Image 1 (cartoon, rainbow, N blue to C red):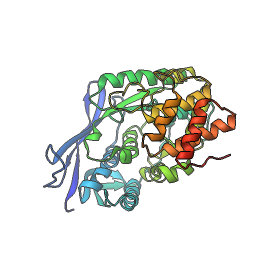
Image 2: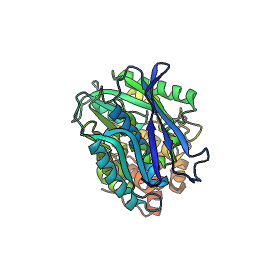
Image 3: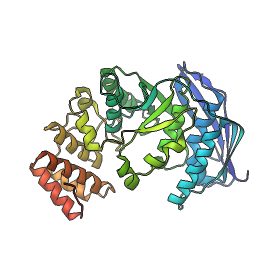
Image 4: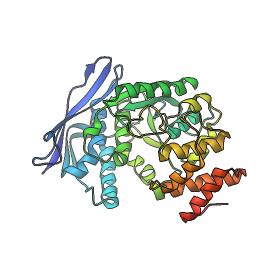
Length: 379
């Protein structure tokens, strides 16, 4: 296959008490965008007691590199085994993204040493868990201490170091993990961890994150029957604002390990309202991804402001997980911050405030900002 990235898996090995799954990526010659040369080593480390099959490794590596391959190569050549249905799904995923973002991606072929049909496994679900609002809601709705939703029972939550928290930020991850664990422990749910350097692959993380999370979860499929990804939008919102949460997840799945979006039934305020009486969540939610604030909330960015207002509306008081109360001035900052989701989030805030009959000064300010932005609010 001409100008393909070649994925050469290594034999799994122990790194301390973890099991490392790794591969050398050999990118096409003359690729100027790789400053460290055409060869990269990528790795994922999971709990040492896991039993990981060759096919699960192949699936994980394909999922973790497909967006980089669409951007940087003319194909993918996996020197290993993979699940046939997943390879088919990744072909359709590439066609989708090459149409969605032709400026960044083109569909490429995938060749593997061997393909095998996916065989459905048994076991509970594994939930990716960042410690943010969406994953906290999904945990609360599925854990034994909370009201259950339809679907498989929850077996554990999984926090990935190297996703939103850079792999070199070990101290920040440990603090964030401790915050998350206070939430999971309060509901009796195990919290597992994995760590990876997958972000060394040159790919847009906002596009590739679901695929990377699905890849890491595939390494746990000897113990869990499916993976859950907490989504940030209702199904209707996703189709307009973030379609990959609806369209992509089925294409990242196979019979061997289905990957399912979780939380479509609630918007972000409704999620905050659902967990507003959960003390451990109110004390430990981590919603900020601002560089330098990986283990806490900065209180000075769009995500902090809007979740802070959702919490104030749901709880009737300032959010304990924020460093300070949100103010009328923060509403004005939201309206002018330039985030593409300003209109959606202000609409949700004003709509739910009106439904509850809340007429505090910050609500009036939000209504004014929304009107100036040309937003429409439901009754």
